[in-house]
Length: 184
Image (cartoon, rainbow, N blue to C red; front, side, top):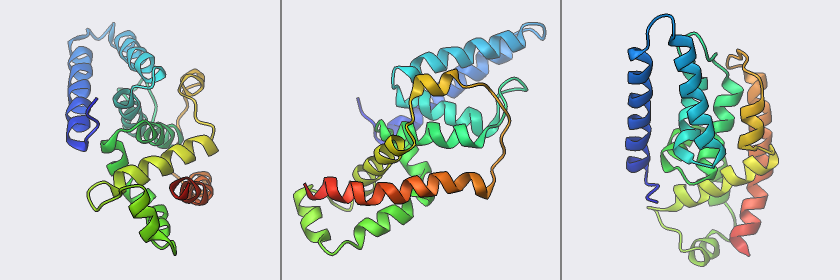
């Protein structure tokens, strides 16, 4: 599969458009049921580690879906990290600010020349390869599991700095693990 940012963005936009059209066609009486059906369909794909569906779930939890699926910043970040860990470059791009600290730390390693040569890293692929590795390590650290995340209840959670602490901690733990992997 072509996981380039542009291809992932196109697939994301197509999925969003398809779901929006499906919901718009629903009658007022059936709208909630249609929203839940659409959400469940995306969850089925996300559980199969489809990084486009995972990225879309991140979007749903960032914005909410109709008045049925609530905003949940925690779930939004988790799905975005999981999508990135599964190779979605569009998700990695959206996490650029969050990942920048880890990418900078890795670039500052004393043996960065060796790391770059050993892993055939370049200006074109560094953010994708290393960003994906960092997200994989964060997903491991947070024990992110698509099926378990789907089974969690739906609740409204707005962004707050305290919530970001667990993601920042996981990112800090990820850096030495990624460096160790890149050196091996």
